[in-house]
Length: 323
Image (cartoon, helix red, strand yellow):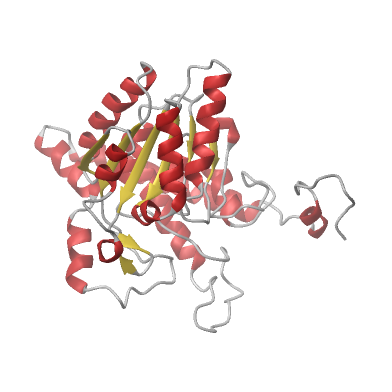
């Protein structure tokens, strides 16, 4: 959680001015260009779930995917280089924040389209089953995705074919700039999953130990061949939808509640109460910060891609060449 927090705070700082809002000009000094969606306040979900995934397991993410990618084991230096749009990035600078992927650790990719990772996860899980492999797939998505078609299609498919798939709904209660509850009918995600035949369990997504324990149990059931499961983790979005979002649409008291539920502070308090020494926790934070500083230095030293690279690694049907 400390590594995710340090990475995203630094990424936010590097992205200031890099995303045009309401006709503003992009600041040429910005090191990260385009929209950057931070998961600050949601770190316990990524850490708690990925703690129980093997390197060979697969993962799909949403547009808010830095934490999942780090927790799955991706190299922080190459991740930062990817956000900087550099050659040494995980995707050679072509994916950026919303399309970051690292197949070497089973991270199949973040996705800029809400809910688009759900059917991709189903396809990956179907492939594992057809190939007779023992791995599972974890699919992270936000609460806004439960009101889109891919959610219905993916859960239905996973149930029909009893796929080895853990659906993880990170419910931060906001869909971009709108409170999700305002346009969600019925009792919500867990009830919808159960109606589609996928056993679901809700938990406090800001308590990393609760997330870990719940994930361990659900993942164990999936590995035992009992079919898909859904984890509904209720968490808090501290920052805006994107790094440039000032959250003028949000009540100040709601932001304060989100800050007071900080999963890192809750974990620190719990550990101190149980005898962990403060210097040990401070060391974890300082090591995370040092790792991030090294990642930034690595990213800044990495060259920008040659413009001609825009024509490589592009999916085609073999009918001609782009010019």
